[in-house]
Amino acid sequence: MNHIALYRKYRPKTFEEVIGQEHITKTLQNQIINGQIGHAYLFTGSRGTGKTSVAKIFAKSVNCLNPNHGSACGECENCKRLEKENDINIIEIDAASNNKVDDIREIRDKVKFMPVGAKYKVYIIDEVHMLSDSAFNALLKTLEEPPAYVIFVLATTEVHKLPQTILSRCIRFDFRLVSTENLIKQLVKVFDKEDIKYDDESLKIIASAGEGSVRDTLSIADSIASYCQGDITKEKTLSVLGTTDHRLIVDFFDKIQDKDVGAVLSKIDEIEKDGKNLAVFAKDLSKHARNLLVCKSCENPNEILNFTDEIFELYKQQAEKFEEKDLIRYMQVFSSAESEIRYALSVRLLLETTCLSAMLGYEVKKN
Image (cartoon, rainbow, N blue to C red):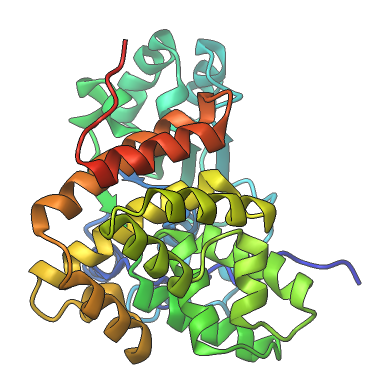
């Protein structure tokens, strides 16, 4: 049997299964319950936060014969038919590859046809910001006054690229990045169903690496589970991701604080010889400075960091050694290096220069 990627296998099929977007799913459910369905929606937000999934769930729910609290029942004739990818009442369009005016004119010509065996015909246009100016103009009239049985759902990661004329005709929903806590809960649910062993520390590392994206988190989990052959540990997780162990990076920051130039250069040499990705290490340094600043300046910092008690105590102790202004400067210096590394001829040399600049209290002058 072919392997199905975890992010596909556990794609939500009802509003209740969507995580971290309750402000959107509850509103859509209420609209369905109260019969206040709009004709055009705009879903915007970072990748992997559920825009397309919610659009598909919404399309099925508005056509469900027996909706349950505004969500598709999954049992009626319409739900079973709409579950098929090629149903003619749910039309998915990728604007990245269908962005010409003729593609939109084709939509405009087809909206006149009634849905078959359903109440609504739903057009889901993904990456809508990729449409050309002429295509947006062609969409405008149809979007403003579509037939009563047509609903448009536009999805985009770059809402600032959409014309104001399009924005003003849509009900807008902003999808948020999913919290690490919710991502961990989802990982636990998935791993338990897949009979995959794991430890708490590896869960937090994977969820953190997902950076608020459910799809990215499950994709990372998939690759790590394959590598670990169903027994995920912290060490194996760090090895796959190329990220740095908390204790190693705490030790590295101690050397920066001590302004020990030789120790810093030696540690970078050791990290490179161990096969770690120096570009990832630079990103970890920036994140570490931020985590220390959270420890030093926020109330209840571990509610933000979500570390184990042991690791949090390690961070808390180190944060006391630094001034807030120094941590802010470290964040700036290492974040700048993170963006420059992709163009650097020597990643190691840039990282070394950045670390020395941070610890000696000045920035390298740029030409």
